[in-house]
Amino acid sequence: MGDFNAKVGKEEAFREIVGNESLLGVSNKNGKRLIDFAMGNGMVVKSMSLQRMNIRKATWNSPDGTTFNQTDHMVIDRGHASDILEVDSCKEVDCDLDHFMVRGKFRQCTAIYRSRGKRKAPQRYNVSKLKEKGVSEKYETELQKKCEALERI
Image (cartoon, rainbow, N blue to C red; front, top):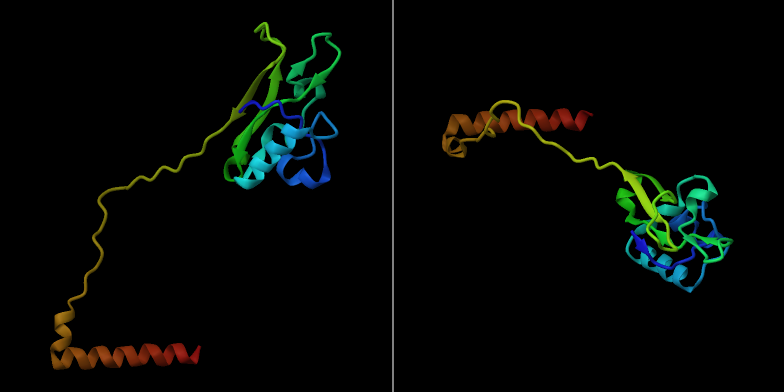
């Protein structure tokens, strides 16, 4: 998440990386660099793939107060992109800057492995018993029966 000064537009070629909810129509040079970075590292620009009102997309305001741009973005790897629930700008926070604060709401799912009771040790086979003549013949006949049953299937 950061101030990339990247204006990323709604170009069709970048739709997979940035989505189609951009405030702008055409990307600038920094926007294309951000898209190249995201593509090269298996990431997505999540701040532009979530649907929200245009007033919540703007992250920069010109000094004259008429021009708004979306230059601050949240970039995340593709595997965790669904964890980002919301990204928007906060105009209510007064930081005496020309940029608006950007906030993101996310969830993090972690796997919890719990063992219930004591685990059973894996069954070990006594291979030395195969040296006994009666045991080895019994094993051989059982194995042949199972192979024949598999061949019938």
